[in-house]
Amino acid sequence: MAEHARQILEGNWLGHATRPSSLLYPHQWSWDSAFTAIGYAHQDQDRAETELRSLFSGQWKNGLLPHIVFVDGGGPYFPGPEVWATEHSPNAPRRPLTSGIVQPPVHATAVWQVYRLARDRPRARRFLHDMLPKLDAWHAYLHRERTRIGSALVEIWHPWESGMDNSPLWDPVLARIQPRDGTAPEHLRTDLRVANPAERPTAAEYDRYLHLVALFRAHAYDDERIRAATPFAVRDVLFNSALVQADHDLTAIARELGKPSTKYEDWARATTQAVEDELWQDGSYADVDVVTGEVLDASTWSRFSPLFAGIPAGDRAEHVLDQLTDAMVEVEGLGPAVPSLSRKDPSFDPALYWRGPVWMNVNWFIYHGLRRYGRHDAAASLRTTMIELARKAGFSEHYHPSTGHGHGGAEFSWSAALVLDLLGQPAGGSSVVTPIGAPET
Image (cartoon, rainbow, N blue to C red; front, side, top):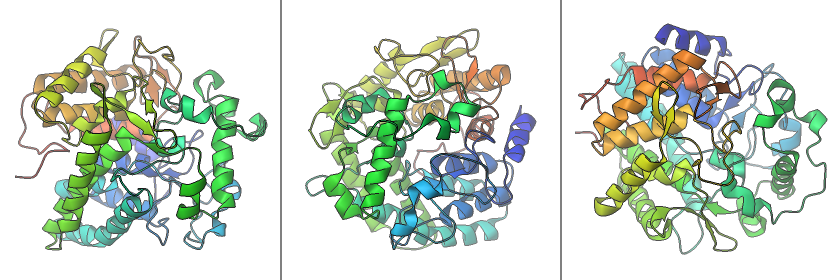
């Protein structure tokens, strides 16, 4: 299994970075690379470090870490650099070309994990030293540009920034946007040519995605102008939970290097409190539409993501863990897993991207959250399911929650990488290896 995973990663290696999938996603994606580096960390320190250094070569002057870094010769993809036109921003790099939006900030978590597992300790320390200012700038951008007066929560301004592109969470927000029909002509969409169209976002959704890109481009990617103009502004549970954990990991990185860490501790504390105060809605964590103040209450897996960051405590934590148990499905012949959307939700579709399938990264977050709260037996069962799912159906982008059949992109990098991470974790019980999301002792 580990050898097969390594072969998938090798097949997607571009010489300095790893594409998620050869045809569907032929460039470098932000949180994909973080997950990929976590997998590499168990096997190849050089590759893990190179993956993250390559991603941060696309970082903007203002700290923004783009969700795509385009690779010369990487292959056709829509929307490509000519659509993003980030040269309109004085902050964007001239090379490499990038997109102009972000993805969930799991990068400090990846850097810390790469460091912790490294065998060449002097080299790893140099890597940590080099990455600290880049991570500092990235987190500072989020806490500075993606918040508004009165809240410590950061905002996403595009569905793609959530990492969960067509989640039903965004349906009521996107419904307010009335783009010109055909903003994203189907003949330009490479995803429809290399994947099953029934498993991809609709034309109406894509028109709205591209409408937002056009808005950002028209405002030259100026955050202040976009903040005032965007019809899509969401305080997202997953994004903020990932940021809390990343701030904790950035604290650990700074302390390891003997650098000041108070700023990062304060960020983590403030965001944690804001998640508890503002995103706990009627007995569950939920996103909030900044424009209308409405709660976005689709039953997605992200309501459990605060467990990864250790956010809930006491009775609230027990309540979320009970909800998580209820949300699990039984994958035929393999065991329990968490689907991207509850089967009870009216938008559930077992094969449609973020509207029902089981994802490896979703269950990786849940696995580490369970371990953080001492639910080792449940974590071990989830670990077994995900490993066996990959063994049965290969390293697919996502899987049918009942049959386990693979869907989406084939030979998917983060599925392979996160299986490597799961294989590197204990099969059951507590571990001498500090789980991701747990404080160092």
